[in-house]
Image 1 (cartoon, each protein chain N blue to C red):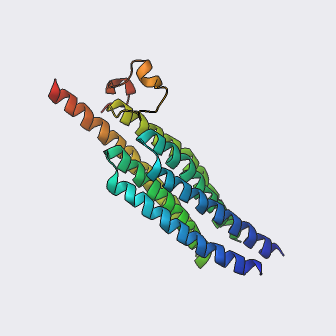
Image 2 (tube, chains in turn brown, orange):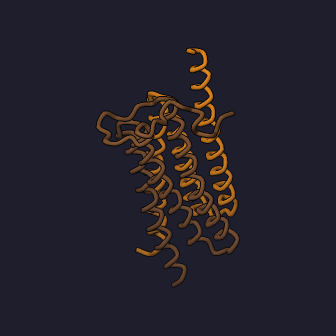
Image 3 (cartoon, chains in turn yellow, blue):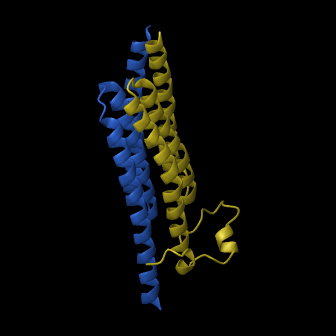
Length: 123
Length: 99
């Protein structure tokens, strides 16, 4: 009974996670500029792989594999926003323009565009 | 339909869907007009590969795959950060040349 429940939960989580990954990839292809693509890839993509790691944790019977998979989820949830935020800030500082349909650009409004040394990440 | 057969089918479907999303991310790496686009697509590629590894871990039952997923996540994060620093430095060097 527990085995069957584990299998069903893992199967549902795997299907949901792969659906999120496919959504993120379609967004990566279809969206118009870097910042909107980043919105798709860093949210839906991270959620997809985290859900699939949770499926591995649910399916496995050993405690060590479960804790490792959950540790991977925590690590991934911590690092994905940091890396995508750094990439977006760098792209904006190096002058990559927004899509024409964008409504607001807070960095440019604060006069911080094109000033790399304001980032405090200089060499 | 028993639960094991359902799991088997969903693992096969997930492998197909993940292959499709890997292909789409590779297409963005190839056609991406700027370097940050390509870096973002590589980041996405690492994320999809982690999902792939989780599916393979369930399918084969090997315990090592969770470790591989953590190591791949670490490498993807460090690669993205290094690429971001590289883009920033390249931009500042070009600015100095213009001045």
